[in-house]
Image 1 (cartoon, rainbow, N blue to C red):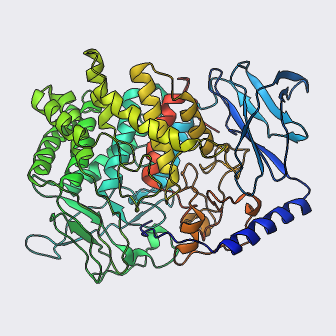
Image 2 (cartoon, rainbow, N blue to C red):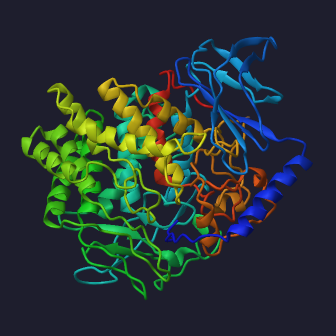
Length: 602
């Protein structure tokens, strides 16, 4: 999950031959057009748009919505919108059917092309947020309920400490970052905050089907809070006292092949202990390569925002725990003020790390959450000060970015401040949100799916950021101008994309979703249900990354475009590896879409 991205141009003649071969192979298979839809379905009042792709020229004026139960045409639409080509597809159409709101199961027919079946109903997202928690539990370090065994119980030994380097510190817990077993405060604190926010906003979207240890059972606590507490307990270990912060566990020496976490064979030179990186505010890297760390505030701010949000959520559930979290939040924020700058993850034997370059967004969110808990106006003023330094998260509107260069991908501080400003009819921070959405909307017009993110590594995390910001902006302002943008990016995750696949493992159960993701669990015969995969990347990125290959014939070969490629293949770690933080952020968004019944997703 930590490879730097370097783009290079492909030879034009080779590209032309590739697209010709793709087109020729499609006709051998006897189909040349497809309709892509959100496989999970559409709520009654959702913006609803399907996308038709054809390898030959078509002239589509109308399309029909067919009731699957009766076989009859439920409604005819004469509003097909031709889009520009997306090679190798010469004809592309957007097929809007938002005006149809009757619950049921339907198909879309345009000429001879028919879509898969899909549902219309307000309950189509019910249980999805809980379902993604399956992946979070599977990523647990310490006791892992998936393997029903413990892992990394000897973590770890301190490095870069002020004194007593190599001394033992107990930091067992938390979540593994992705398919590897590295652990980062940056992604873990963000994931914890997102799940805390999800519960605080939509508690009715979560059930109680698992115990605190992750095994099936009922303990009277919503499962999402058990997961939040798992994350908070680990963060407290990584920030054991004022001015003492650790940023990560392990490094890329972890990358020694597929193995289950309880049988980890990575060797860091101290038996079963793994290195725990102390935050120094200076560049780190134990071998040839170094990161570009300039301070500690990015990590301190993430600690503080998760602790402050946790304090509010657990206030009535566990008052003593809540008080501890607030104390730690205040000290972490103060430490961030004293150490401005970014605290990047550390490379090991390769030059790859999370290249985060922004930190004011982390301090902004920490400040506004501290204000929410303390009502101390100084924190609100700090939030305004930091928020004004980065009105728009810099990846928005860009064509590319380095790996995790602008992180978190969505700035949750802006909507938190905008809610307070709304009371005074002050639109400053909601306008910042709008500006970011405008940049995405402008770029989205370049393809028939109206998706406006750069297709860099972890593009699905960017998709999740867009739908989160769009949804919160609409909720705060009442402005529905970005509903179609939100719908397009949401539907992309559930199958309205060139490949016709959901990007979440196991959803929908009878649909098309990743089955061969980059994971030891999968390679060993299991599955990573609920995980959000990295998502499509520019072809130039896929062709430039080291150690990438396809282990079998590409089942999506017909649908690889000049815009982006995706492979359901464990050997493609760039598009088909699930990420813990991306999954947690999507839990937040999905909790907002549910009807409130919180039934278990099957």
